[in-house]
Length: 221
Image (cartoon, rainbow, N blue to C red; front, side, top):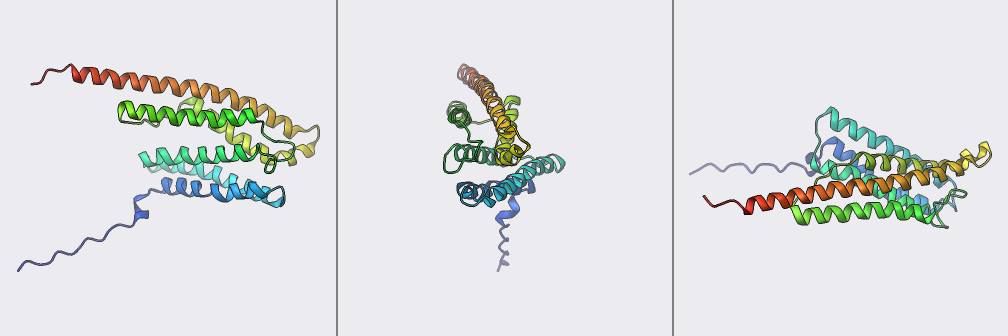
């Protein structure tokens, strides 16, 4: 009679995630309270400070998960998706809410064209990734330099919008002018990002097509 082998214990789901991925996932979940606070900050001014606090925590956690990924040498495909996804969701939600009359910050309401540039750029990238995947059966998550600069500028814009009432206390509406200047910077970088990611996508599709031609031209052995 053979001995009954013990059933191996299933590892906990949380154990599959590295610490950088855990931080990215928690940062993604923090977007929900951030959005709720922004939606009601005009009725309760303290909510803007709480939203700013969450925004700062998310910013530091973004730096921390990147540092840990490099330090622990645990860069994963999941992390390559979660990290930018958390940034994109935060930026898009913040940009839309800060452009609406009932949730904008007084004196620093984002113009519609900036929101169109921010959301349009991300939609273009997502659509491009889908096209590349359908053509080549793979998606390469490779942030370009203009894309990184655009994300940083967008985060900077959101931060200055939330701080603009306090900065305006200096006088001469300094905070409002900084926000307007950052709007133009974000718009220019968004355009450059679209061009950069379009070139990367076209190169990837061309490489996939070349591989398909090469494979189809091989003679069976």
